[in-house]
Image 1 (cartoon, one colour):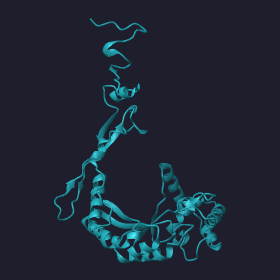
Image 2: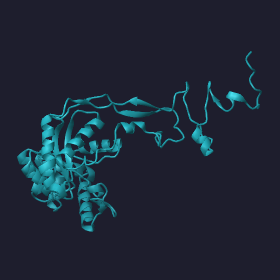
Image 3: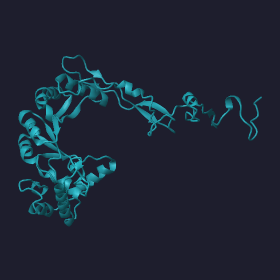
Image 4: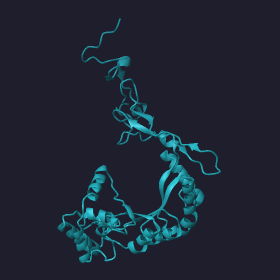
Length: 332
């Protein structure tokens, strides 16, 4: 015979002791017992764990370098899927802090993989392909090689050129904050693109003369980053930053003058700042540094907003733009 249920207020005993959820009780995790907490290991109906693993990307072939054997297959990446309430040991997104088995599938980069030596460059690309689950990277940038130019030009770039010939890399670029070293890449190599950060903006055109005409002549694309100069062209006010440091008074005053001209023409300063670099025929794109989907939508809306020719003309008349710098008006 089935035992009768306990009367109201009567304490349960045996295996049915404690709170129940449907047919499945919630056992106390041993770690919680040791720590003296009343936290429970949350489970869904049917006893399934809160966190489970599932494949996130398919395995894809990664081409092996010439002379190094057949192509290998990248291991499938794994992601954690959060279901239900987080485990008591979980972080803010429900991920367990202590147990991350998917990280064991991808060990840390090999020592020396980030160096400019040819073997280190190739190893870095191969490890990136494995982690990305891809067999080709569209564009690879040499990042800030200012202090190692000879090594970058004589060792790193030739290896990237070989990887481009093998098809593992689609295009080669170099990214820096200074135009001079980038111009050297354009003159001495068959590079595809350069990324100039902060030196061709509405406030600072110091990178124009030495790089952009040369890049246009050689057919090298220029990507302009830092178009808001880290903040002063987004909101020029006391304490605003230029190149991640407090803006000098003269730069802040110049930014305020530019904003005043923009306001007279009904254009947000940020819109003018995003449009300005595209006046050069060498510039193929601008980087906005968006941190969220909302900022991406905002940047797209600003780029879609027309800027009247009179705005650029007034900036030039007031000496806020040099005479030789092209504007979107002149680019058509």
